[in-house]
Image (cartoon, rainbow, N blue to C red):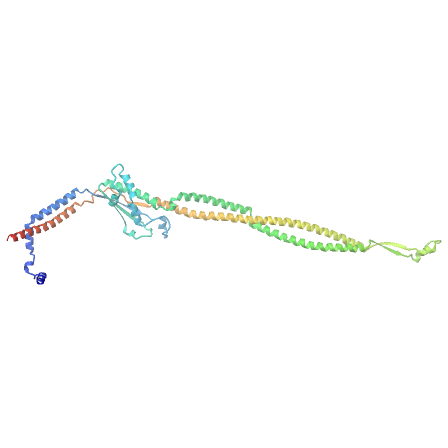
Length: 433
């Protein structure tokens, strides 16, 4: 049993009878030529019927130019200006179902409306190859859209409406927040501008009415006057104490000095000789003369006391006057100092308000310019390069190609069928023999 299996697995040696004669093959096909002809004819007829029965398909095209923001064209800063995204986002927007539903509702109003999914399948969106690798958003690119369908007029209307809705949707979705709030920023910009002018005028008026330099110079002058007054008062008080002590001493001295000095003297011999005769001689011997003489020291002391009293009164009056001036100067100094502190505080507050308004004005001015440019960009960022044109030649079906392929397929099927028929006939003839 093992020997039989090994014999069966051994390949048969090559023989000349194993070769296929092309002439025999050709004759076999020639004998069955009608099978080949019939198969080819049937497939050609089927292809022709399919090509004739298949409805004509037309294709409408349009091309849009997506422009970058103006600021990106003018500067190298890709983060400046309005929004611009990659081409894939624009392709997704072009095939958005809600966008297509709006277009379908506008174009097919009152008629049977196609499905948005079917419109997506029939639409083809592409961008130019050079823009697919641009990630900076600085270069413009083209967006090509094609739509296939059976009604040429409907295709043109559909693409025209699609351009309008796509442009509007692009402006709505890709406009910046600054563009959407342009009116708000403009209104606030004008308000801040007026407030800043009012704050500047208020600060200037307050500085004019409360000059800090003048107040500081006034305080310096008053401070110097106060110092001088205090020094004068101190000096005159010391002088007053000295003069009062001197006056007391003079008064003590004048008490010891009488105003008039009485001098007692005996009469001279000459005076005695002149005494009339008959006078008691004893009495003449006791005769004494008294002379009153003004004390010069008393007069001098009196004059000194008078001068000292006058000087003391003058010093007291001067000290009182100086103290009154000092009090008035100190009061004015305190008032000016309070006014200076209050003025500085108010000026600092007004300067803070002005600085805050100035910063807000600067920021709003920058945003105002950005939003104004962004608003201009969002208004018309898309240009139509190729308007949709009514197609006149169908793109499908390709009848010649369908018939040719059907004929080729029928020919191959016919040849295969002819070989099968020839094989069956040969097997049958061999079995009968």
